[in-house]
Each structure stands twice: as structure tokens, then as C-alpha cells.
Length: 229
Ligand SMILES: C[S@@+](CC[C@H](N)C(=O)[O-])C[C@H]1O[C@@H](n2cnc3c(N)ncnc32)[C@H](O)[C@@H]1O
Image (cartoon, rainbow, N blue to C red; front, side, top):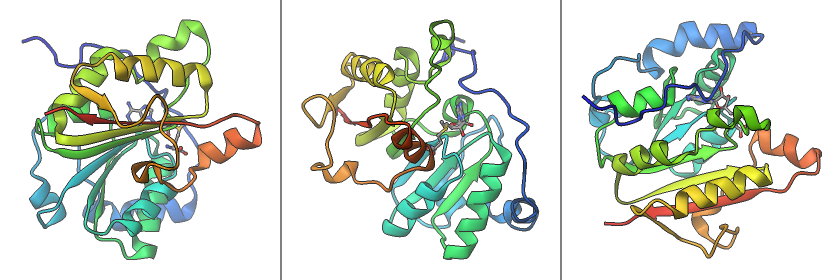
């Protein structure tokens, strides 16, 4: 059978990363309740979140502060965060418990495989991809997440009217994102080019990685597209 997401080049490298005692504790204490183990089998959101509600997936939440802040602001929405980096998973679990959030779950696995095997077609209210690794060097560009075959797969997982919100602080990647998203016939741009803070869907707390980019003098580019029916 032809794979829906043909690329197998990973968009990340597994970093050892230092894990704090608190993150480790969060993983062992809250992991069983808050995480969904990776299995190559479709999941039922109503079962995972214990309620019927629109579900948004976030790919690569890093340390998860933004995920938690958005989940606090939108209690009526389920958020499924996908991240491979263990300290970040522990940090988000700790934050979820600290904030008493009941609308966040985590899958620690490659998001490309999670979408392909665990998420039903036409099921997502939205997808957030904030500051995906820019892979600066030309010979690494093939590792970038935002590429036509991946976006085609993403669109198939969005519900009609579902949205994708991407952001980057790397101008050259922003140009690529705009070209890829505008080149996908299943999507329509909610803005004229890059989205601005005037668009309510673009309102999001500043991410950790974004703050770092701003300190380095980078700009920020947001892109918000909706699935055409
Ligand atoms: C540059 S960081 C940005 C983190 C966060 N969104 C922020 O803005 O602070 C990108 C994150 O995406 C994660 N990532 C990259 N590719 C991934 C994939 N295929 N599946 C899951 N996570 C991925 C990396 O582990 C990393 O934590």
C-alpha cells in the first residue's frame, strides 16, 4: 500500500537532553494518565479526553508552556500535544497538573507517524506547528517538516473548515511555508500572505523558541490557512 506520508527522513534528531528531577517525577507520576502510548492504530478522541469536543493537535510543543497557556485560554477544546523530546514532555505534564488542566494529552513520538497511523481523517479542528526546526543548512532542508507531501497528509486530517497555524522566526523558511501552503489546493489562506495579529486565530502566547529568536533579532512570521470544503 502506498504510504500517505512518503518521507521517512526525520524532522528531528534525538537529543539526550538533561532531564530535571521534577520532570522525571512528572513523567512517572502523571505519564499513565496524561500520555497516550504510540500504537499504529487509530485513537478515539472521546475516549482519550473523556468528552466530545473539537480537537487540536500541536506538533513539536518543545517545553509546552505555550500549549498549556492556549489550553487554559480555550477550555472547550481538546489539545493533543506531540513531541519527541523527553524533558519537554515531563515539563508539560508538570504544567498540566500545576494548572489543573483536563483538556491536554500527550503522545511522545514522531508526529509524522502519529498523524499517519493514529489520527482519523477529517477529524481535527486545527493543527499548530510553532517554530518547527528551521534546519538552516541547505543540505538539511530535506528534514524540514513543512513540505508538500506532509501538508497534503495534514489537510486530509483536518475537518472541513479546520485550520493549520504555522509560525517561524526564520525568514527563508517562512517563504517556503507560504509557497507550500499556498500551493496546496486543499487549503485557503485566511490572510493576504502572512497572517498578522489582527487575525484572532493568530493570537498565541509567545513561545520559548520565539523569545530566543527575538533576542537574536529575528522576525516572526505566522501563517493561518483553512481547509477548503
Ligand atoms: C525549534 S523547537 C520549537 C518548540 C516550541 N514549539 C517553541 O516554539 O518553543 C521544535 C520542536 O519540534 C520537535 N519536533 C521536531 N520534529 C518533530 C516530529 N516529527 N515529531 C514530534 N516532535 C518534533 C523537536 O523535538 C523540538 O522540540
